[in-house]
Length: 291
Image (cartoon, rainbow, N blue to C red; front, side):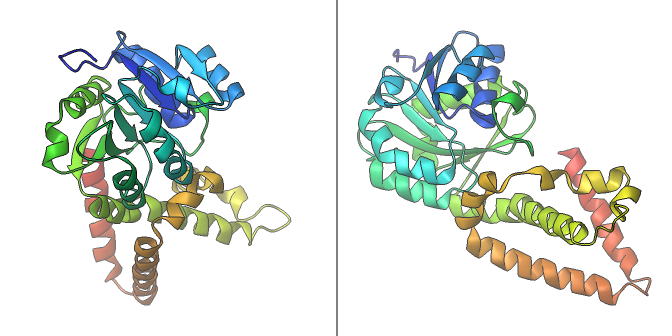
């Protein structure tokens, strides 16, 4: 890395939806950066054929990390935690290492154990609030991050590090919106705003699936409203397993509170009091679409 702390070489570990989209975004909006990717050989080759990465690696991790200014870990939570010791050992001392995992408390705890604060590569927790119900490099999109919040985990010393400043500039180039917050605060917020909606969609889809008759009812009468409501039901358990397991406490409390809200709605079905619930929902809908 030059004295100006310019990120010119990026290695992406995991070239699926998020990692592949990050590579495509770099090639579209930061064309002076060389991007390498590490994954299973067939996935890495597909990522290279789609121009998400310039060079592919598989197998031994060390060659993929060599000379990288930025190491972008876009792997599942458990795989990320397992690889952190190896990344810390083999990453260049000047490198910034960041992840894209959907929960942050366990990741930051593992990072603190493996990345000394006073020497070697620097770890920065991150989470792009962008995604799709379908995973894999085939669904990667250079504009996946555009206009979406990108959570960054760390206190002010990390924010002031030149390596972090260089990464934030990249996020701004790909039109993401960086937001700094703590790991527990992050996990609580995404538990309510992201993970709970996923479980609610799974519950609703399972409820309807169990009630399908020989004519396909009630689904044969479904309109676009149900399709919109159940978009998240297309997500795979493999994608969500680690997220649920590492945010159990928040999700358990959220499900209890949500169940009470459903009980309240049932009690108000025959009254005009339900209007207040619709009014609150309408306000939140407007707020979401103003962000």
